[in-house]
Every structure is written in C-alpha cells, then in structure tokens.
Length: 143
Image 1 (cartoon, helix red, strand yellow):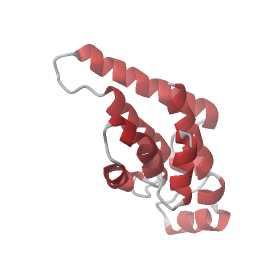
Image 2: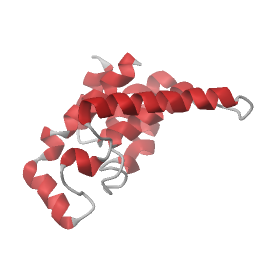
Image 3: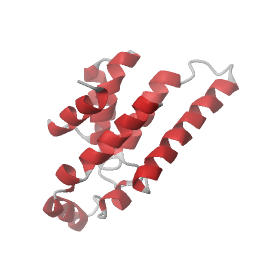
Image 4: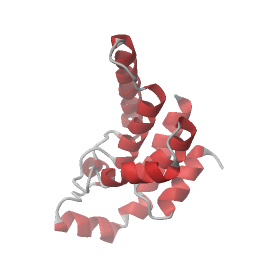
C-alpha cells in the first residue's frame, strides 16, 4: 500500500485529515502511529473544526517538520531550508486546490452550527476531503 493509499485508508476509518496524513508518514520518520494519531487529533476540521488551515495540510507540514526540522538553534540555514520546503508544499497544494483554508476548500464554515450542518448535508467529508488527503500525500511523495 502506498503512503497516499494508507492516508486515505486511515481517513476512511474515521481519523481526521491531519491524523491520516501524519500517521501514514510519521512512523517512517521515527514517530509511532499512536503518537501521530494523538498529536494530529486537534488539527482536523481546519484546527479544532475552526475552518482554518486544512488538516491535510497541517498533517503534511508536521511530516515536513519530522523530516527536516532543526534539532538545534545553531544553524539558521536549516530553519530557512525547512520554511522553504513548507512554502513549496503550500504552493503545490494551492496550485491543485486554490487554497489551504478549510472553509474555502469546503465552501462552508465548520465553526458554525449552520456550516457544520451544511457540511453534513453535502457530505463534504466523504466527497471532498479525500481529495485533499490524497493531494497532501502525493505532494509529500513528490517532495
């Protein structure tokens, strides 16, 4: 199973988008799946269902941190290089989806009762979110 397929499988099993992406990649980066699922749990729904940064995006950024995050403060070039990778990821995701903001991607605001109901009625978690999970994972693979 590829990493994008694994991420989609986790998402289909009702883990949020951030959990799905981080747990698909984290174990290869030294963070066990249980900790990945726990760490990414608050990031679903655009960070705590606030509709902000897409969970698939934040999960992928956490993966980039595991891969390239600086362990010390003595090398400012390492920090700059990591930030450049994040910007590269975001640019690629925006090229595919025009935004990284959950409410913009879904066309509804999960932070309001009306927006949450609209998301449920439109089944966005089943119809739209898998694409964002797959896109985030495919971009990580390409990077």
